[in-house]
Image (cartoon, rainbow, N blue to C red; front, side, top):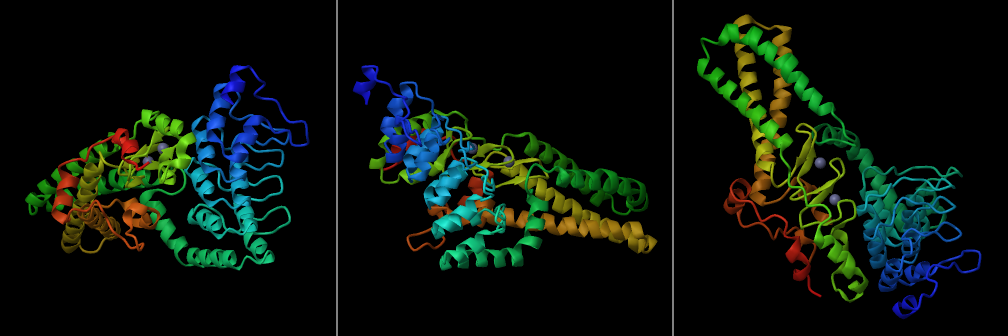
Length: 449
Ligand SMILES: [Zn+2]
Ligand SMILES: [Zn+2]
């Protein structure tokens, strides 16, 4: 190829036929990432379509060429383009049953639900493919709808049944049951606490509103006049913890939670090495760590936050109350914030009970008491789970998704945490010393080749 390119051979001619593939499509079809590299450097467009609108990325996905697809994504291939039938790269990967490619595309942030011109979503096509792993990967995403209808009114379940893919039918039915049982209440509480779909300011407004418009006026106008002289020490403590709460809230909100550097050298180096990846033993581990949005090589334990749209080191969760991610650099401040809420709510309960004892039951006190009880319960639960996670050297994200992380399982698939050095050292690590940041330079060298 290099010889031909040097002799100025035509590098981008379409075949004369119905499909009209260009050389780059052939290279992608066969998974020759090194040839794709030569063609791109000779000036071929990375999104060049054939006559049916297929891009090189779609072709690689169609034929299960994961390394080539990752290389193309790294070289700027767009993952949302559709061919003349409205099918994207994800549709093709799902239709042909390439589970690892589906995962790669999910990591690069594609739209999971997009229907093609026949109304088929990737889940429909995965059910047609008969590959149960593809269906499982798509179902893992709680955002994905299980019963979308295509233009013939068929759901993925109906398609799987009519094609007699009994294992897929089982996966879909189990998932449906699991969601019916758990998802409505759990996902609502979860969304309220940790942020649901999109970038909701609701929890933040709820918190601000209930503290500034309801809690403080009640405290100043009703509670202080009655109890200040009797409970002076408690009031001092309450004020101290309130100041601490606002201070930690501001720091947790303003501080960089540990964003991974965008456009890192490591990323481009890994992309350049992809053409030679076939010889790599653990290439899938490397591929799954490339973030094609941030253009970085995610360190172990980092995750891409959809809301911040950045990769965050030691990603814990995206917290809508602080309106920021919780990660390596602000987790202590988040912890302080949660603990001060719990302590303040405990004081509020104490004051409310005192006021009720002195002034008798009044609707204002009772409402305040109920609200404080709810926030107090949540505050202490979060404080305790934070301490528990710190003791275990585990993030909230890992706690809930440990099955997806191979580094948290032993050879038999059971939970095993290689980062844990015993509760005391783990706590020291959490509160005192930070692990080194930005290790991605050593990372490629560490991988066995
Ligand atoms: Zn990212
Ligand atoms: Zn975030």
